[in-house]
Amino acid sequence: MDKTIRIAHGSGGKLTHELIESVFKKHFSNNFLMQGNDSAIFNVPNKKLAFTTDSFVITPIFFKGGDIGRLSVCGTVNDLVSAGAKPLFLSCGFIIEEGLLTSDLEKIAESLGRTATACGVKIVTGDTKVVQKGACDKLFINTSGIGSIIEGVEVSGSNARAGDVVIISGDIGDHGCSIMVEREKLNIKTELESDCAPLNSMIEGLLGITKNIHVLRDPTRGGVATTLNEIAFQSKVGIKIIEENLHIKSQVKGICSILGMDPLYMANEGKMIIIAPKTEESLILSKLKEYREGIDSFTAGYITEEHPKRVVMNTITGGSRIIDMLTGDQLPRIC
Image 1 (tube, rainbow, N blue to C red):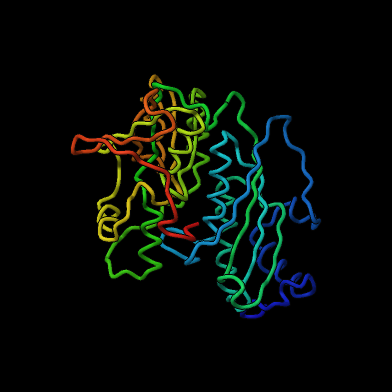
Image 2 (cartoon, rainbow, N blue to C red):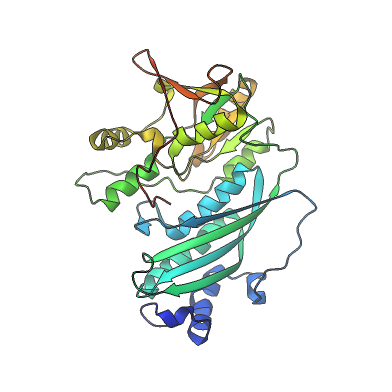
């Protein structure tokens, strides 16, 4: 293999074949992928399926807590989990900038393959394109995922009901804040790192003890604030958040304060918002805390009939403020 990726690696010819054999098949190998066809053919149980797709353009492509390969698997797996599905298969498409170090591509492929294996999913098909230097930034990845809806699970952003509680599976804002510090090379000493993690084991464990859950949603771009606004709009309900209940690391608060940003709008890549009846609250929190990804789970607020389609936060000072959907982008290319 060459030390860098060349335009010819995306030509579909000998160099493309060499790249697929020496990098992608090496790290993604399974009986579906090794068929070598343009589409994977497989049988699935006679159940409802969930299908999702996402593209990842994050910069930098290596960061504290992960890389673009791990992120692409976690993001797609967590989207399937949010539909109440057990992830089964992934596709993976690469758009590579000419000149990318082959060693960097292999590190990312290894990370992507290792994360997929840990999630119990198979990468069964993919595609590779190489573009001229400057036409993209190092590497973009598109992944699509298929999962089987877990029997008895009916979750949707339109299912929130007055009286439900809003549970979040851990501290918020870690991913967005850590990426910002790295990207902008801020002179801030911090141990903060991305929360990038797959949540399928934790949520499957939770659904194994109760299926009385109305909404599952991972608050990625736009953060918790934007995701809650989406749910409030879909369900035509109000959402009340209690500021003193929120779990935000002091480092995230400090960095956001310095830069004039709000942790509520910072992206998360390893957190889940769970909306369920109040009667399920203690059971859900207890189960989530059995997992490393959910050890810091907390109740952020509740669903109300007041101020429909709005998110309102009761502040520490005793007042309240509207938490609107993000306008613009605090930090582009965050995933």
